[in-house]
Length: 230
Length: 230
Image 1: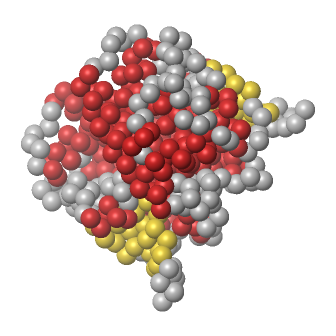
Image 2 (image 1 turned 90 degrees about the vertical axis):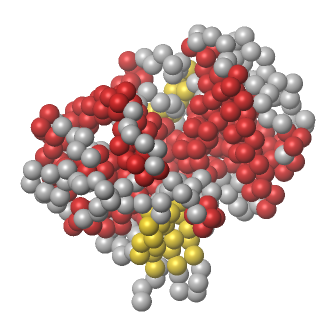
Image 3 (image 1 turned 90 degrees about the horizontal axis):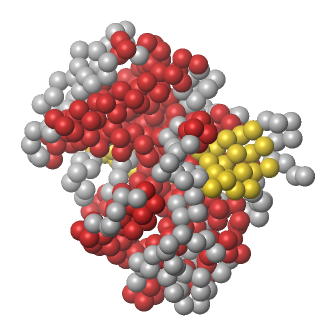
C-alpha cells in the first residue's frame, strides 16, 4: 500500500470536480472516489468543507494523519507541491501567472457568466427538481458562452496550449468546463476551429477517459461527447 | 533602483485589491499605484486582464522584461514564490491548505453571499450612479454577513490566527473584506469578541496604515474605521 491514500469527494458533472479528476489522472496519482450530491450537502461534507463546495481531496498518511484540501485553489497548488514529478504549473513565472489567471477565470468569471445560467437551467434544475429551464436565462447563458469561447479561440490561435508553451492546469480547467457543457450539446464546435483541435488533443489523453463514461441519469450525452475524433 | 519595480493597478475600496496591498505591505515590498475605476474598465486594463477584474500587479525587471499577474490567486502565489523572505502561506501542508481554502472562501462564497448584495447596494450603486440601495437586498446581505461573521468568530475562538498557528494570507483576506464593510459601519463588532480582538491586532500592523487613510468621496468612514483601539 502506498501513502498517501487519496480520496476525492466530488460530483461527476461538477466542472470544478472534473478539473481535479483530470489533474490527478494526468499526474498518475490513483485515488478513491466518494460521489457527492452537492445540492444536498451532508453533515460530513460540511464538516470537511464548511462552504459546501466541491471538490474535497483527503490524503491519508501511514500513521493515520490526514491532510484535507478543499476546492481547486488549495488542491491544485498542493498537488504540484506534494507530487512535483509531473508539474502542471509552468516553470516560467509569466506563464505560471498566466495559467493561474486562467484557472481563476472559471471561478470568478465563467461560473458567474455561463454556469450560473446555462448549467443551472440545463442540469442543476433537473438535479434539484426545480422544473423546466427558463428560456431567457438559457439564451443569456448561451450568449455569454459564445463570448467566452471566442476568447479562448483567440488564445488558442496564438498558443500551443491555453496558457502558452506548456500543457498546464489551465488546459484542464477549460477542458473540464467544456466537457460538461458538451455533454449537454451546447458547444458549437464548428465555429471554433482552434478550440476544437485543442479539445480533440486533450480529450485523447488517458486522464480524460473516466469522464467520457460518466452518465447523468435521464440525460443522454451529445453525439460527440465520447468521440475522440468528431 | 531595485528590481523588480512593482506597480499595482487597483481600486482602494475593492476588497480583493486591499488584500494585495496588505500582502505587499506585510512583505515590505514597495510598489507604485495606479487607481482603477473597475466599473469603467479602460482598454489598458482589459489588455492587461481580459476579465476586467482587479487587482493587477506588474513587475518590471532591469532589461525591460515584465511579469503581469492578474487577480489574487496568481498574485499571492507569485509573491510567496518570488519574495519568500517573509512567507505568508504556512509551511505545514494542512495549515497551508487551510489558508488557501479561506482565501478562496472570499472569491467563491463571500463575494456571492455578501458583497454582491451589501457592497453592491451601499458602494457600487453609488459609484456607478445606479440610485438608492434596494432595502430587501441590503437586508439579505446583512443576514448573510452575520452568518459569515459567526463562522469566522468560531474559527478565531479556537485558533491564534484565521488558518491556525501562523499569520497568513487568510488573515489579510478576511481583514481586507472586513475593512471595507467596516468603512460603511456594517460590522456589529460587539457581537463578535474574538473577531474584534483579532481585528484590532491585525489593524495595528504597519501594512494596514495606508488603508486607514483611504477616503471614498461623499461617504464618511464609520467612527471606528481609523481607530486602532475601538
